[in-house]
Image (cartoon, rainbow, N blue to C red):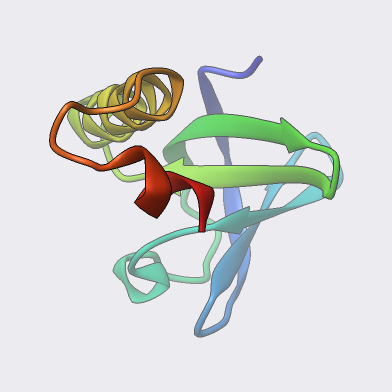
Length: 95
């Protein structure tokens, strides 16, 4: 797992940014890529790495608080998936 990348933003697109760290460009998905500027100034981007059967993705955050909130929401989602709620009928869950 990565905590953060410290490098230069080399590309900004509507869905992701590319941050170059030690000569390697990483494609990082961000909620608001336009928060970052292309240029020679070093940027610290907090990273969450997600690995699934469909591949691997890097999610970038402007600060540690944004990353922590994202990871809390992921934990809540897993908790909800692991326990059927008493408010959801089991027939609904089977559909």
